[in-house]
Figure (cartoon, rainbow, N blue to C red):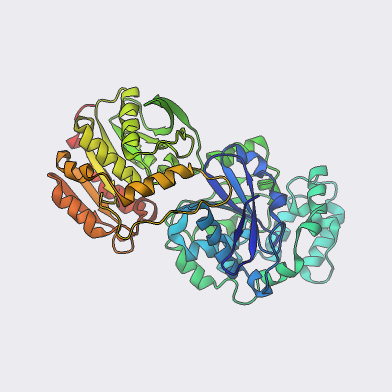
Length: 515
């Protein structure tokens, strides 16, 4: 079980299930240990789940300062987990009260979010609590249940403040009231830190105006999932939550409520969650250069090919919002996992030239004589090495915020491996750091061999890549153009519309030649 330290020294525990690209999971309660979520109804078959026990719950330590239980104070713990995983951006799934923590995180760190799923999350962070009327309206949908006659009056009295909490109305918090649900409810008292829960929403926890302003800058795809039987949130309130994000989808699951939407999902529910936009994990493999490369593909097989190469630490799923738009019936788009990443082989040799040769062999395995190639960061370096080595394979080249092959000054120090399983081979991090510190001088000397039209996209002053290096590359290449999108290093994630506009125009059908 991985243990990490929060900024204030509190030890935080994570429970890791499954394999694949990490999915950080924030539990509800508020302040209930993550154990109640289990494997999210089988979602660990598609993703590697990192279930975080919030401080003071489950296996995580009790903090010295109880005020740090407040929702906005927990944002630093979530960011500590991202840093622990060495991810430039991470996918997050949050349930119930954990949704407000996820929204506070997204508002504070919009560029660090890959994808976000809010599962039956009441939007306290937006100043929109579920009302008693919402909860009673959802409860009335259960009037055919055998327990309804006894449960509803007690529930109504509790919501009105004229009655105490009564376990008789616990069924309203579950989509199916069966033995599994009863056992789940019986564990709640032992799994919940009630004192911490009382402080979770203390004054200052949410700040709806600040949260809304921050969420307006979230370019990542967001799934807001509402259950038909859920009173917090009702589907209408979930829609208002989705409206706070620039790119949110809102499917409605009928007959589902609360924990049934995650920890007790049916097989059909699991398929739905695995196939929502941004969560598609269908993989294919191909033998290339003596190893197995995993890849994703979009678009008609006979359409002109485009190859998308991801950054270090990511995988082909990084392009899952860009690739469908590029395909759009006019292109065949491929997004492989580079060696040492995701579900491709982790062979131990991580030279840039080896990655280049993998892509050369992959194109051969697909029978592609010529393709447009788009590369981000490390993937951009692999792309320009391919264009130098085999210019006949590359029709047009797009380099997104790519580092020039100059020695780092000062050199990057040896990195310390984070605890726990990683979605990439740590040896790849060490090997690529060495090559960034001392790149092969031939890589720069051979830039003149890149004669095909090339588009360089810089991330502007907030990017860690020196933008003067990107300008220098553009000046050196015979047929280059350069655009700057002030989005930081993750241009295609933070500003997908601007990225697609620039790339789509550059890869215009009028300039194509047969592959």
